[in-house]
Amino acid sequence: MSSGKILVAQGGGPTAVINQSLVGVVLEARRFREVTKVYGALHGVRGIVNEDFLDLTQETSHNLELVAATPSSALGSTRDKPDLKYCEDIFKVLKAHDIGHFFYIGGNDSSDTVRIVSEQARAEGYPLRAVHIPKTIDNDLVGNDHTPGFPSAARFVAQAFAGANLDNASLPGVYVGVVMGRHAGFLTAASALGRKFPDDGPHLIYLPERVFSLEQFLADVKETYARHGRCVIAVSEGIHDASGEAIASLLAKEVERDAHGNVQLSGTGALADLLCDEIKEKLGIKRVRGDTFGYLQRSFLGCVSDVDQREAREVGEKAVQFAMWGDRDGSVAIRRSGDYAVQYELLPLETVAGKTRTMEDAFISASGTNVTDAFINYLRPLLGSGLPDAHRLRSPAVPKILKR
Image (cartoon, rainbow, N blue to C red; front, side, top):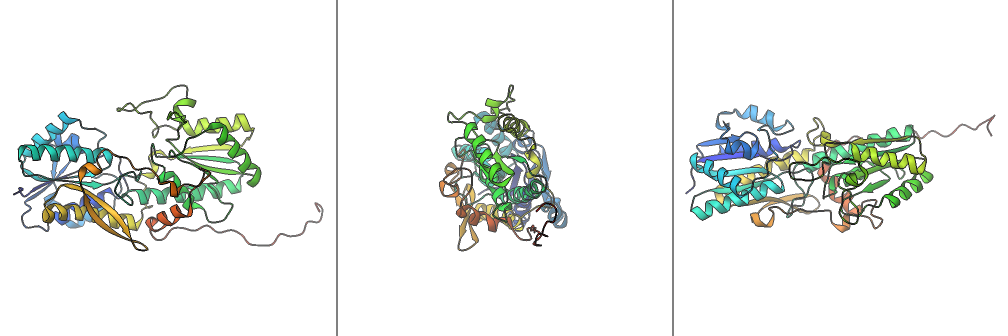
């Protein structure tokens, strides 16, 4: 029989709704009579090994609700990627504090951490229930129709490109917007939901699921600019050539790498600048501008999908229910049904841990520079209610007198 102590932590990049999952765990756990304490680890797994805990049992429900509606990770997060030794240290702390239920809110790496800790507890016969709660703006967790955090980030991307398109239509030129997504292009593809009229941008969308050719890119831009007199482009930070080499590293003279050896993509505007330079130099277009959305899309205040908020809360609640009533370890997954409804399942940790989902072929156009109606229909209900709308003047032109 597991003890009555619960530990919850948040890992990886923050989102606009990750605190909904945290609060879902806390409030749902406090409903169970057998739960004596609910602890929160500061800064994810690093806080666990350092025993930096908060007693969330003593938080008021009102303050928890305020925190739930606040973007970013209230407990703080970490980019630590635990190996076996690191997970052994985590397990030692869990045992020392007599933790009976461990909930970790995060993405691919977080699910793998939960898997290793779960296996260690099972090997030692320690009564621990370990559950992974999904979270990532990349939408790249396998077994899920979509992942909490993605819809709100997608809503931001769609609105940002809608605004960039209006700006570009007023002062025509070429605009390049680089969006997060190393391996999965879901977030970049969300830019398509910013279109309303047939000639709206983004006119070109480049995803990491397709090989990127600089020569073809320039040809696409040239053709689009000739047709519309302008061109809005959405580019995933993870675009790569046929060998898998990131375009950012091929074009840049110097590249930064993160703690895991990956080319630093999110913390730099290099890719947007490099692509803009290529367009100016090779195509001779003078007005070329680029932006890198970077961290803006993760925790943007006031641009949150109500659908995302609700589901992020529910995955936290369901995690506790699965652990307390089902007495099983696993990873909570969102499954879609009907026109739009969701159900929650608990998947075996090994089916999710360390794996990456990418965009399905059915979501990507044959040209590789756009999305299909299937993707539009997939994403639209996730963006939630109250999306702003753009309008155009419909007045007839006045006949010219001097310039006829």
